[in-house]
Every structure is written in structure tokens, then in C-alpha cells.
Amino acid sequence: MAKTKVKTLHQKLNYIQSNLKVEKGRTNSFGKYKYRNLDDIFEALKPLLKETESIITVTDEIIGCNGMNYVKARVCFMAEDGEGMSSSIYTEGWAREPVTRKGMDDSQITGSTSSYARKYAMNGLFAIDDTADADSMDNTDHQAGELSKDQVSNLLEMANKADKVNIVASKIDDRTINKGNYKASIKKLEGMLSGK
Image (cartoon, rainbow, N blue to C red; front, side, top):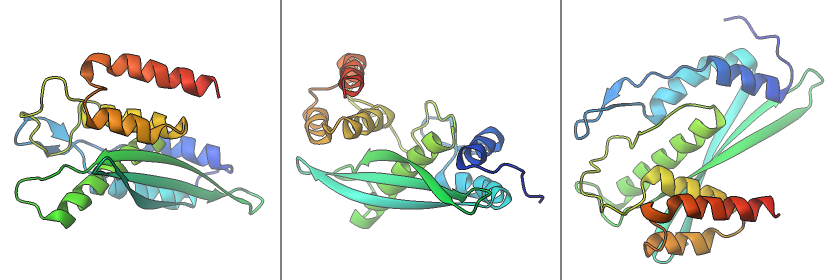
């Protein structure tokens, strides 16, 4: 595979965002919809990283809030420019560990949550469209007013930028923020961010 002629970090990231194609080749047996997982993203991404002479690192941080564990995943994209200077850009994704998940021990629950948070961060960094994708979970027993994982991740990511993550996480946990006031909560956080 020939090396691309792009030089800067932003040019390399733009090239990858424009050329990365990750098919939804898996089927959720509960919801009967197609989805992709983290392995699929890595497999499609590696040739483009090699082509652009770029690398990524993926790390997790466990954050406890109100008795719940959240996984904050960070994906960092790094490359050198034509002058040999290195630069980077990153995105973060959040996911909350469920208290229990049928058929999984504690380490599997954390691993599953980490994979989801990492996938969400990869989607953001590489502009991967992942609408209506909740991996391979059975979501049929969620309460009508409960936020989706994507909504929780969006709120926590914005709250982190506004230095309000603990407050927002507690409001998500006690259902003060729910599907009914999700849009209003997003607007309030956007207002906090624009005022910074």
C-alpha cells in the first residue's frame, strides 16, 4: 500500500475519516439489527494508520460516582508532520457498568463496558456513524424514561468538558435526567460550555 502525501496531523486524520469504511457485519439476535464492534473498527483502521504513518493509543480510566462505576475511554491519534514534529488529538467515550449482567462475572462486565466506551470514542475520533447501535445487548427491558447508552455518553462527555461530570452523573443515576428532559439537559450543558 502506497504512503499518502498528507503531511499534517489534521490532514492525516481527515484522510482516515474520509476513507475509513467499517461495515456493520454482525447481527443483534435480540433486536434483529446490524452492528459493528471494536474489533471490526481496529481491523479496518490498521491499514489506514500504516498508510498515513500514524498511530493510536487507547486507554481507560475507571471513575466511581454514587456507587456506580463509569469507564472513560480515551483514544489518542498521533502522527509526525513533514518536519519530524509529533502532535496528537484525542476523543473520549463514556459508559456506565451495569450492576449485574446475566451470564457475566465482574471482570467481564468491566471489559464489556470498556469495549463500548472505546468504540464510542473511536466513533467520535474517526467520524464513524453509529446511530441506533447498542452493540449486542438486549435492551427490551429498559424503563420507558431511561436514557440510552449513547445519551448517557453524550451527557458525560459534555459534562466532563464543563467540569460538571460528578453532578451530571448523579442526576443520571437518580433519573433526574431522563429521556423527557435529555434535550434540555444537553442545551444547558451547551450553554455552560459557551460561557467558558
